[in-house]
Figure 1 (cartoon, one colour):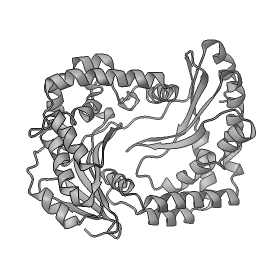
Figure 2 (tube, one colour):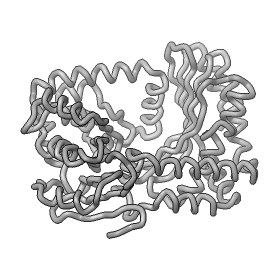
Figure 3 (cartoon, one colour):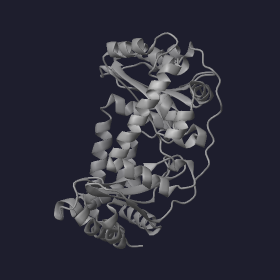
Figure 4 (tube, rainbow, N blue to C red):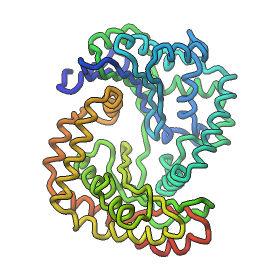
Length: 418
């Protein structure tokens, strides 16, 4: 299928392949996207997807861990990976003349992963250290606590890193079984952006053997997000606050209106939160709002850190902003938000890695809308639609998570309005 933005081919008994041509670029970014994440794990498997993100860099059938690391360094580009609640991705960014080498390495990591037991014993300790690091970062710690409270009886609420007990019980054989079960088509997709020909990538992939895996993972739809107050006593320099209302799922038709509402609430330097909380009152260094979307649910979140002595005042200000936000949206404010989003989308067109990651959204929907078409939809959104959407979401209630020293929590939580 030829699209003005990307080309797509389905390899027989193999992966879906997408490319975005950038003929003037000097590089190519290639990504292997797997439709599996932390929410798809059983209790006994908690953390196994993230563990495999680490372990696929520990050697293949043709290269041990040191040879693989040296080969990646020889390419001179960027090698990375990420695990989320619904997705795993391994990606390389290299000079365009090296894309075949990058493809060989990536497919070898996924199709021929060695998963040596000695490396797993060591890497498990690295993940424990990563857990400790996250626990030491107040913003990340409270985010994990917040998501767990939003979805208390659902796998979405589990931390992506898993837990010590589950990881301690997972063997290298279980890693291999999980890999063989899920890291295959049809839940595996390969995308590339940059100076690369679609037909050449398809030909290179068509000659590779692809093991048959399970069908796409089936996910249990979560119920409504929880509302109320989660008080989290913890000794730290600042009070940390997260408040979330219902958002949108990742392929929602309401994306333009939600993006605009979020941009005006806390997405930029002229947003309500930044202007009132930071610029006018000096209550916080870091404050903003964010849209977080999954395949079947989403949240619209506000995050803020403030000195403990001023956290109650900060909550008051945020509550005032939320109370008057939807009805108070003005035409000039909306036009400014539209312009900000347009610039972000259009500037993103220059990024080879950004375009590769953008193509990864194809796992969530039948057809990708180009950034240019999104800009058109954003500009076509009227003020009444944004006001109505924001009012509806904020009227459904929020969950507030407050992390602060125990003696400060009562005053802060008392300022939160239903």
